[in-house]
Image 1 (spheres, rainbow, N blue to C red):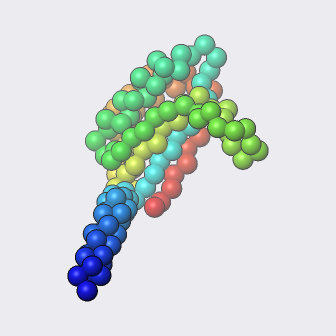
Image 2 (image 1 turned 90 degrees about the horizontal axis):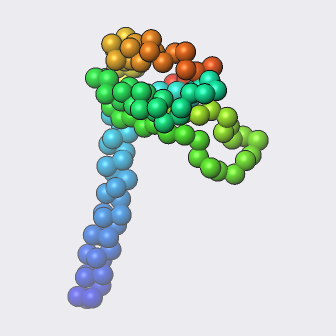
Length: 129
C-alpha cells in the first residue's frame, strides 16, 4: 500500500512539474493579445547588422511587451518558405490599443523617418491571439 501511495505522489508531483512551464506560457500568452510582425527587404548596399541595431530601438517603445529581431533562418528551401527578406521584427502587445499607441510612439516614428530609405519593401502581418 505504501509503495502505491508513494508512486501516486511521485506521479502527481512529476505531472505538476511537467505542466508548470506550459501553465506559465499560457498565462503569458493570455496577456499578449496581439503579435505585430514586420519583414524588411533592404536596398542593396545597406548593412544588415547596422539596420538591426537601428531597428532594435523599436523594442524600447513603451507599449511593446516583447520584441524579437532576426534574419531568415537557414531552413530547407520549400515552396511555402520565404527567405527573401533580410530582417524581421516580431513585437508582442497586450492589446490592439497598445499596438495603436506604438504606431504613434516618437521612437517608432523617428525610426521610420531615419531608416525608411534603407528598405525597398516592408510587409506587416498583425495577428490577434
